[in-house]
Length: 476
Image 1 (cartoon, helix red, strand yellow):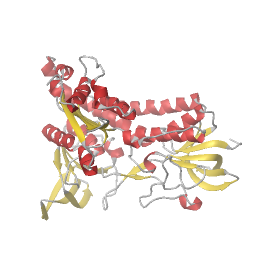
Image 2 (cartoon, one colour):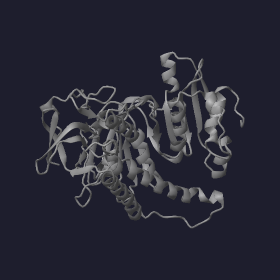
Image 3 (cartoon, one colour):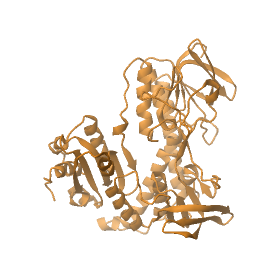
Image 4 (cartoon, helix red, strand yellow):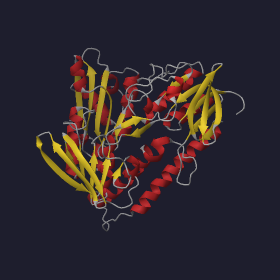
């Protein structure tokens, strides 16, 4: 790397590695720097998502769902077998294999696209003659690049007075590495991560209690969807307590003691004891070690890197994407920004529409949405129409034995443009993409209602919801 590079990407998570690959496809000379270590000390590309986030959590969610279905769902289909048992060691080994396959897949993509990789931690040193200098540790090697993309991701936010020890008090990383199914598991935070990880261990046999500070459940989702989800999760056995104020968390050899108060009785302190406690109260942008102050990189009060609509920072030639900037902390949002920034550096017109970024909760039932909720539309004063259709009225859902949930579509009252689509039910993590495509092309509910959907499929519920906007569903 003796000559100056066109681009140095700091971070090999979903945003970083995708930015590096797209830039290389466009003919730029690219290096990607990442410090994540595998168990043997080697490089583990993919960031939080691949190593302790999206990928391993979905592996455990899938395994635990198979177990729960074998335990309670197969008999309905006439499949009778002895009561299944859990081999957690094998389950964790499978998860590790899935993670390693994804790590190796990124390594292969770097080689295929001629992206140079450096295993280490990068920090700004200086800028001279329109070229940035980065110092990479260990070794204090210096890299020079005309453009920098910062894709350093985020870290789990700790609870004050309850630092992560990954033994009793767990972040998402520790929650994915539990070696023995706990009898009683506590989760502080009933957001996406808390619900997914709580679901894994509830299915495998733990008694799970979620303590949520907000007075409403899953406040980021549409109100009707959240209400249906709360009913489903509590029926499954998840205990969810809302409006909780944590007074104290104390870890000991025997477990974790949590003292708290509820909004309904603020003067009454309560206590619960757990074998393990997962703390899932959000994530913080990871800018430590970049030496941002040395070069004047602008950060906001949360530590996020300040960027404009094109992900450009206040420094010439420096860009930032993903969890370390504004917007939702989602892997696919980071990927979109990575592609857009690479294309802008290459002189093209990269584009990201934050209004059509889909959200997914990979529980059972799954939850997914894109666009605005009814509450947001009411608050904005925009006139709209709504249509819903239940999975219980869908032939494929009945045949599969997964009939809980529904799809709801919101459209402008005058133009009929789709403004939001909200789903809870089987396979909605896949179904939401149709809504994203439709909204990206500014389709109307009538457009989706007029498109032929294969029968019998779950996707017909999306079409029926579109028909319902005009009060003309065909199958209810």
